[in-house]
Length: 236
Image (cartoon, rainbow, N blue to C red):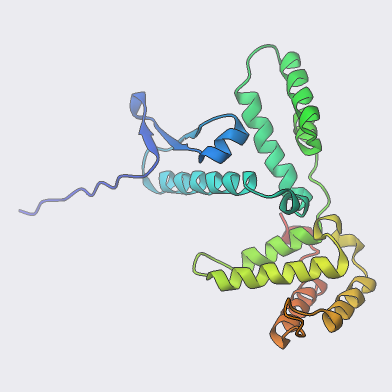
């Protein structure tokens, strides 16, 4: 008579709580913990097993990685982050601050708003005062983020990512901070500025840009110009 063998897989960063409940718990790296003012990232699971549990675990891991990446951005990198990403990050931070506060609602709101003003974070202030506020207008930085999401996956190598970053810097040098250029405002003048930049730009060693680099930049511009990125449905 055959016997069934149960396979038990130990998931990383999962705690067992009372009543059979589970919790995702992972310590922040020290530099991130110092900026957040807390040492641990933790979220309760709504499922206890099966596919739903695995999907939740995957989502928590992705959220943790996203928050670490955001906190480690340099001032220049943050300046070039799309307003949409900044606002979504601010909403997550506002929710975290609300969850960690106690007292009457008005008092908490005032204290958190004052905190946002002191830090100079306008996005956080907006997320605290108006949690249902619409997201900022989509910019070329949002379009670039979508391009990266569509073209890269977990199997993409470092070279592919570095190449895209170089292209992004070329676009930035040609037409300005991508995070400050709304998609609706793009005109032929932006395309002409890009073409002029490609003709005159050089590498660090003084050599002209390679055909691969210039064609890749043009490819992205055509990708946007075709209308795929301008559609609100394409950039959720």
